[in-house]
Every structure is written in C-alpha cells, then in structure tokens.
Image 1 (cartoon, one colour):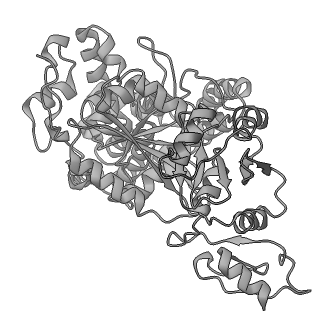
Image 2 (cartoon, helix red, strand yellow):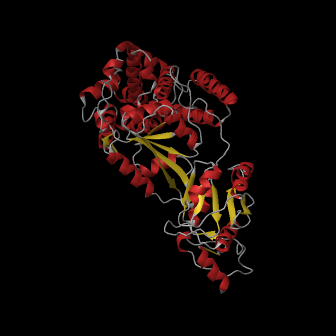
Image 3 (tube, rainbow, N blue to C red):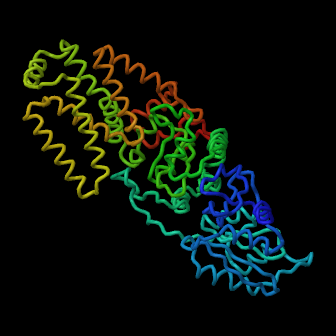
Length: 534
C-alpha cells in the first residue's frame, strides 16, 4: 500500500466518483471501477495544513500531483545562481506569464541566497531583486497553493521551510462604470465593479484617513472567495467589527459567489421577509456610510457592497440628498415615505373599501366606482389578484429580456393590454389607476431588497383585507409594524430612529437638514466619535 501512504502523507487522497465528505475522506484503491483514480483530492477541511518542506522534491510532488490534469495551472522550474532548485506556481489567465518570467524568474536566477548568520533573511534578499512590494512568507504549502489559485504567484526554494507569495494578479474585469441599479442626477456616477481591489481603491480614494482599515478574509471551503471588511478604527463601534468578523469566519460553505449570499449568511433573523443588511453600488455612498460609523463588506466578484448595521430609514435614503439643496432633498424624502405607505396599502385599501366598507367613500366617488364596476364580471379581490399577477409577470419579463426588447414589452403590456382589459370589461378603470400607482411608488423606494420585501407584505395585507375588510387591513398593519420593531441589525434597532426615538435622527430621517446642521453622526450606530462637524 505505498501509494495510499504517499497520498496520506501529502494531504490528499484518491477517491471514487461519489466522494464522501471532504473533511473525512478515506483512501480508495485505484481500479477499473474508479474512474477518478488518477485525480488528487485536496483536503479542504480548515484544520488541515501541509507545511513547506526543505525537501524540494517533496514540495514539487505535492503540487504536481494536485495539479493533475489542470492545463491552466502552470509549474515553472528554474535554478538559482547558487544551485538551489526552485519552482513557481501560477494560474494562466489570472496573472501574466510574461511578467512572471521577466520580473521574477530571470532576476531570481541571478540570486545567491547566503546562509551565514550575518546575512539578510531570504525574503529581504528576494525583495531587493524582485522589486515587488507584495511579497510575503507562507510556511503552509497548502495555503500557498490556494493563494496561487486566487491569482498570486507561489515560489518554493530548495532548502527553505517557507514559501513566498508574490502579488501579481492581472485578472480581466470591466472598467468602472455607472451602477446599474442606483441611478443619480447629482454627484459621482462611478459604480463598483466585480474586482475587489478596484472596489477597495474606489473607497480608499475617497477616505484617505490612516485609520481606514481593510481586513481581508476568505469564505468558501472550495471557492476561497476574498471578502474585505472596511471600517475606520477609532470611529466604528468595535463590537460591530468583532461581531461581523466572527460571523464571517464562522461561515462553512463550499462556494460564495455574491454578496447577496453573504448577507443571508450573516443576518441575525434569516427567516424574516425583511432584509437586515443594506447595500449599494456607489462608492460615494459606501464612503459616506463608513464615515457615519457603519462597516462595509466587499465580496470579490460582486459589484454590490454590503453595509451594516441597517435600518429602514437608511434604506430609504440616497447619497444624492446630500448633494442638493436641503429644501428639495427634504421634499424628496417626504415623497419616498408617502410612496412607501402607498405601495403596501393601496390595493388592500381598494379591496376593503369596495367590497366591505363602501360607506367610507364620498357619495360622488361611490357612484363613480359603482358605475365603473357594473360590467366587471369579477369581485374586487379577484380583479386585484389578476392585475397584480399580470404586473408581476410584466416586471419579471422586463428584467429577463434584453434591454432593447424589455422597453417594448413594457409599452405593450402596460398600454395595449391594459387598455384592452378595460374595453373588454374585465377590470375597472379605477383599479388600473391604483395598480399603476402602486407599481410607480414601489420603484421610488431606493433599496431594491426593501422594495422586493414590501411586495410580499402587500400581498399579506391584501389577503387580510379580502377576508376582514378595513379591520383586516388595520390588523395587518399592526402586525407589520410589530415585525419591524422586533428586528435588530447588529445591535441597532431596525426601526431606529423612530423606535426607540432619537430626536435629531427622527428629524433627519424625514427631512434633509441644512449642511451646517449635520454636525453629528447617528447615535443609533453607536460610533466611538459622535461629532462629525465642528
């Protein structure tokens, strides 16, 4: 059994086509019924660690066996000037092969590592010839291999019990462009991209504070997705930073593809229909919120940056409010809150009044409503359900279709089909107005996650109104407000500053104060430094 013993020693084992849990794999002998017998399986358990050995051949065998049939993983062997054998591990397409050869391999071939006690450490000798500031020691061979898979270079030299990670990533990504979901008239038009380093640079360019801290972590036992935790030391609440760090480090998933997955994994109330983590695509918004005492989470591969803690008032605000005159910004804030209320109550109120409590309407409006519904064959509830179902189909089709077709689909669906439904007598004209108003107000809400959750709340209120009328709508609103008051986001009440009430925060959430009055940060974020302007 020497083959199995070798695999156990270097940290990966042979497996069949249905591997067991990677953290508890058992050796499998190769044979005719084992189609993957020539594939090395890396031990992905967090406890596993294969140290770098001074034996060059042992390190090379480990990396060569793990490389297997992967054509994009390259191992470049070369010899230093003092005769030490070395190899460089890289992934084609994630770093430049030509740059690695010119800036690393050729200079390293002229290097003579001195072993005398008075000589400089090997890393310092390397840094003088490689001229690369991103150079660090890595005593773990397994972690060095993972670093190469994320786009860095991993260098192993014979006789040393440490390897070296050289930052040389050159992954293609789209250029900085305006955000797709956060349009604005005033202020910067830059948006985050899928490249983590580009995103951190966009924030760092706006916050040059030396206390600005960007901690790097990895999530995903197989993807090893880089996650950056951004905060200002001495401003952001340390308890918030510690809690976020622990929650992220405790995640055990195979793959983390987007910040939306991370938000669901670190929420305190995952079964709640309402989001408890805010987010943005705009660097200026992220920078402003970090300076308010919040923390930002950037996931490599996602253009959407998470912000914590989150409140309902923060999801109803946009950074653009700070760039405009306070009078106009105050008007827009009030307009959003009105739209918030209309988007969840308009269909339910229509059903409750028309079907159960028509006496609440003025006489003229009551006669007009009755005249419009004379030829409608459906009840008010059925009428609303049909139109809401049609609007949801139209919304989903507009998102999935290409941009040039989605605009035409909106026109056809909203105008032609709606007009045909009225002419056919299937729905009343008043309902078309209410459904159109509900759809417009839902688009006014800045946070896409909050707007999506409110659509579900709307159907909940509609069901209660269909059964109990105005009484059901009232009970539904009480339950909805109770759910809001019960939510917390990393120590901050989701309904702050309304409940509990913060005098200045309450006012700032409803209107935009003049710029000279915005002298303090929100108290409910519990920042270390409350004063923002002196």
